[in-house]
Length: 336
Image (cartoon, rainbow, N blue to C red; front, side, top):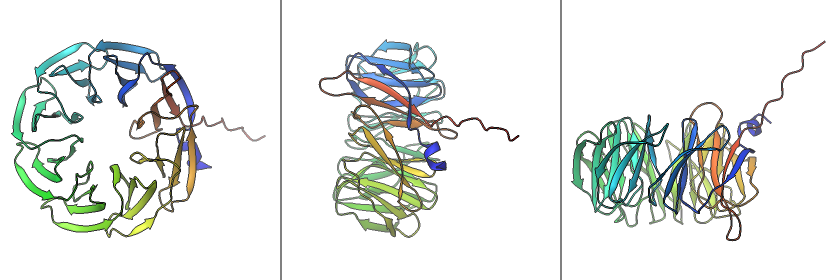
């Protein structure tokens, strides 16, 4: 029962939203940030779901957050907002953004018009810009390395500080978002393989034929890697050897997996999210909602009790923003 206590399986609150969501929610500090198709970016309080602020900005990309800044790509501009109030801190011009913004440790990465630009989060100053190629998926920062998955099947490894090439690899199909560590990088490809490469020089470590297209960014816990795919499977691999450890199926098309405590959670366009034990692959609980998810949820914050923010709804129903949390632990009863 210990694992069930860590899953965010209890609905803390559910609030209606006035329009269909345009991008997945983002958990940042004590707020949940949402983007709506009506041209609204809003922050809801984590405590009760009440709207803290909103601004009129039309975008189809999720917001990015770093420290006290919220970054929005809208109207051929990058807008940096104050996370507490939604007020504009700075703006800078940009061509139409094609991939989710990446904000991390003072860096803001912007993919647009077949190029990639690095800005300073603090004031929007451009540090470097270079041609790369069309990009629709989010890049990944790990230390001073930047990994960029491109639509044409290339994976670029760049120096984050300068934008210079470290190494490039070509694949038969578009690659997924990258899970990166200091020593190795992991990703799937539309060529139906899952790959592990050396982070320093891009040398091949191992690869495994999945036989179907992986979904989203892989997840990891300890020496285990987790990959979902369009055949409705969750596969666990050994991080070092690439050995397939276990592979349960789910009754829906899964989104990218998420590790919560000692479980890996698999969401999909369903009212039920399934969890599996990271070590064995055995069922480890579930998160049940009243209505089906309309896009992948967000889990956070890292460390401590993890909550889940999600959009639910249907063609005939009201769109809702829902926050779930672990069940409350009952107080212990002192012995007589």
